[in-house]
Length: 79
Image (cartoon, rainbow, N blue to C red; front, side):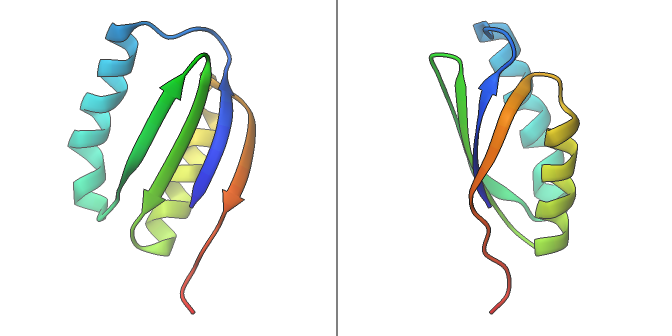
């Protein structure tokens, strides 16, 4: 799953490091890998892993108040 969103407010280095730490702690247990890019108030994220786990994480992201205007660019499931 690849999505973009706008940050609801600017994030500082400590906030970004916190996101990284939580992701590194939680995602491997769910079989999720990916990439998160934050630049000029915008996120681009690629999430890879079991479809159910990725969708559950994305649902959680949609509830995260740090994100606004979330748009899915690519959603690929099992063929």
